[in-house]
Every structure is written in C-alpha cells, then in structure tokens.
Length: 483
Image 1 (cartoon, rainbow, N blue to C red):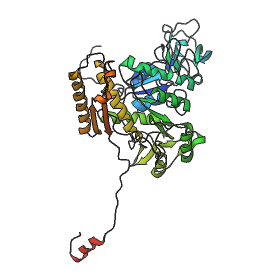
Image 2: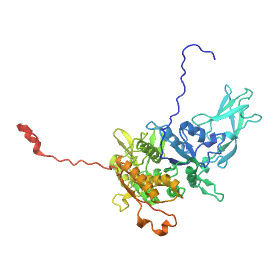
Image 3: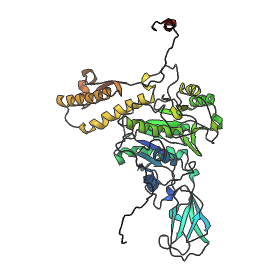
Image 4: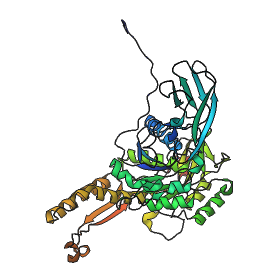
C-alpha cells in the first residue's frame, strides 16, 4: 500500500509476559478445554510448559467462565492475568481426553448472518465438526471465540444455506474424575495424571518444585497421591504441595474445617492445606492456586530462593467464600485459630486481602514435632538445598574422586552457603566430608557422603510490643525533663 506522511496504528494489547529467570516451577494437574484445538494430541497427559496467557490458549485452550469443568483455567488466569504480579512459567498436565471422555454424534442448527454463526456450546470438539457436503478449511472454518464459551462457524464461500445443520462430538468433562487425575503408569510405561510429573525434568530440563491440583486436592486420595509423588521425583527431586480442604456446606465453619483436616489426613510437612476459597467478582479461586502463584513470585523476588513464606502477601481477591459462592467472613484472630492447626487461609489487613498462615500441614500449636517442619519456607529451603546439591554435582558422578575433587566440592558449596547466609536467606550452612560417614567399605564401592548442616531463617510469625505506663514523664509539668 502506498503511503506518504506520518501514521500510527493502535494495536491490540500485548500478552503479559512473566519475568525471565524464574526457577520455581509449579506443576498443575487437572482438566483443560484442549478440545478447542484442532490437534490436541500433545496436550493430553503430557507435561506442557506454559510461558504466558497466549501461550496457554495456543497449547491447551482456555475458557474464561467454566472453571468447574475446566479447573486448570483458574491456574492460567491466576498466573497470567492477575492484577498483582504476572508470573510463570508453569507446567500443566491435562487429563481430559476428548478421544475418551466423549459424547458422540451431536448436532446443532446454526443460523448464519453475514456468513457467520455460532454453536453456543463450550464442549464441542473442534476437530469433529462437520457440515454435510462441505470441507472444513475450504468451505468453512470452525474455532472457539476468545473466552471459550462458543464456537464460531464462518462460511468461506457464501454458498452455505442458513440455517445449516452442523454435526460434532462433545467432550464430557465429568468422565475425567479423581482416578484420572491420580493416573499411574501402565504396562507399556505410559504415564497419566500425577505420574506425568516424572517427565517434567526429562522433557524440559527443569526441576518441578510445587504441586497443585485445584478442584481435586480436597479429595484425600488425590492429596495423598500428590504427597507421594512430591518425594524423590525421578529418584532425586523434592517438591512441596499446596492443597485445598473441603469448602462445601458440610465444612462451612472454622471448627468443622479443623476437624476435617484431622479426619482426612492433611497433616504432612510436605503440604500446606488451605481453607476456604476466595472470590473476585463472580470468579472463585482455590487458595492453593493463589498460594502457588504467590510462592512463585515471592521466590523470584528473593533471587529464586524459597526462603520466605507467602503468608501476609497480597492476593488478587475481594473476599472469602465457600465452594458454592456463599460469602464467609472472619477476622484475623479467627484466622489464627486455623493457623494454629496448620491451615492456611486469608486475612484482611492493611487495606488488602493477604494469604494468612505459613505453617505446614503437620503443624499444630503445642505439638511435639520436628522443628524443621514448622514452616513452609523452612521445608522448601531444605528441599531447595537438596535439589541444588543434586543438580550442581550430578555432572561429577562417575568421575575420579580424589582429594582435590573433594576440596572443590567443599569449597564451592560452602561459598554458596556463605552467600545465602550473607543475604539472610539461611542462618547457618556448613558442608563437610567426614571419615566417620565414609567408611572404606563404601568408598571402595564408589559411594561418597557429604554431611550438610543448615539452619533456615524463621519467619517473624508474631511481633509483640510490651508496653508499660510510667509516671516518670510527669516531671515535665514542673519544668523538668522526662526520664
């Protein structure tokens, strides 16, 4: 096009891109509307890396309203469309399979206006759409509108008579249940559900560090599977679980929530159970999702070190609610009752809603327990130290281990510890190679042990000022000075 002069074009808003260099990697398990894609073969029971909102739409689909059927859309929104801090990347494992969870042979009559019409159904499997005597891609196109609520049919030739009968298959999200999320490994080694986490490091060269399954982790079997999978991933890596407790009408009070936690075994140091849910307008969020998002951006602000709890950090919500949307209100003192039983919740403080509670599920006030397991950041720091040692020195495996190599490891790791201490991220960190831990019988087998001791930095859970009245200041009334 010929142009002469000064011009300006107003373009659509660019996608928000999370900051680069984030190493904390959440892994989500659940359902997504992958049937929106013409080819979803790479989006079912696969470890899909998502870097941004548009990346998610292109790789796994998105529905802006139906988070009940497509629960992981909540995670996509919370990470990439919140108003506090967009953060990623995330790994998504979708268990909804349009080839299996399907209701076949459906029809709709579509009225065309200016060669366009809609199927008002968010379950239509795009690749199955057909019009008798017409070729998709040549005579017509079919695609979901951006919010994922319905399918747009476009007549490319102007020859389709309106209304036109469209045939298609529907996905049935109800068929993807808790067993689908838990998954497993079949006789051929094919992994599904939570077991797919074993493929994250192999596929993306990234260590999975946070697990979440919003909409499913309130099922004790799913929660148990997450906690099992979080230990020694690929025989090496450790992860932390953000879980949700039941928030239905049967668990609608603080007292009931405390009892539910104990009854259903949400008491591991590897998890932080959350209750109730949160809302922002018409949207409902699982607190586990908000905790995962917040953990990731707090870690990023701390140079990717998980030394700080997400507690008392702002979240993009306007209040608390139950699963059915019923509003629920309690103050910080009542929230502390939940915290005293190792339950994370929300609190309104300083003019904003914040996550409230930094304990692990194992915690209960007055309980005799391993002090390393009191706070989520303490557990995650130990996991971080363990993951770092393995990832840093795995390359040395099978190389000759002489005194020089031992000294190199000791000096390198101690220098890393000293940096963390200098930054206040740990209080103490020491590594040693002791003879007592390395008997000759082990060394001749090629097995070497380095002893590591560390003290993680505890969060200031409470700050108390003890204030007393004194009469000393009355002397100013007589021209003196206050003591």
